[in-house]
Structures are given as structure tokens and as C-alpha cells.
Length: 130
Image (cartoon, rainbow, N blue to C red; front, top):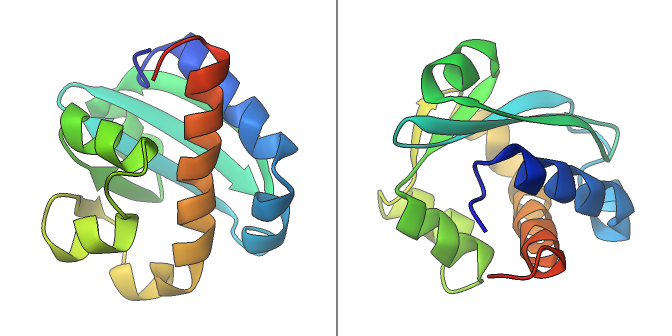
């Protein structure tokens, strides 16, 4: 599955919505979160522990519309989703960059970010590939 295709984005948004852990961890996180790999992006609209929408967009459009953007290689995104890499370590180690947004304001959402990746793992399994 390509995370940056609309079908995957839709499955991910659904998995986020079904995640009791994200409802708890992300309940106070209202943002348009952009995830970018090369020329591709996903824009997640998160509010009150739910995913309002997810759009596969070109990276430039994702960055323009997002409040916060995380950028990494597709391999790094795969490692994060598969649980082979942790988001905090990947950011601190430079594998994931923050080209838009403020790292300090995101510190309180590290648990929510982990749960987002767990939901992506669940969504990728529901589409029949990892």
C-alpha cells in the first residue's frame, strides 16, 4: 500500500476515527497535519480526537494547507508505520524533519502521534499490505 494514495488516506482516517486511544490522546489536538514524502503528501484534519478528513495531495499543496508538516523519505514513513522506528527518535535523529510548525508546541502530542502511526498500521493491514 502506498500511504500517499487517496484510498490509503481514507482507510487511515477511518482507523483514526475508530481508535479509542486517539480519541483519548488526541482529544485536545486540533490541527491540519501534513505528512510529506518527496512530491507526495497527506493532509489530515484532526479535531477532538477524530479525523475529520484525509486528502492525498502533492507535497507543495499539503505544505500550503497544513498547520504543521512532517517530512521524511517513504522508507522512513514505512518504518514508522510498521513500528520499526519511533516518531520521537526519528525526529530527534533527523530522519523526520519539521519544515512547517513548532516542535515545542507538538511536544504534548507525542502520544497522539504514536497512536496515529498505530492507526496507519491498522489501515495498511485492512488494505491487504504492509
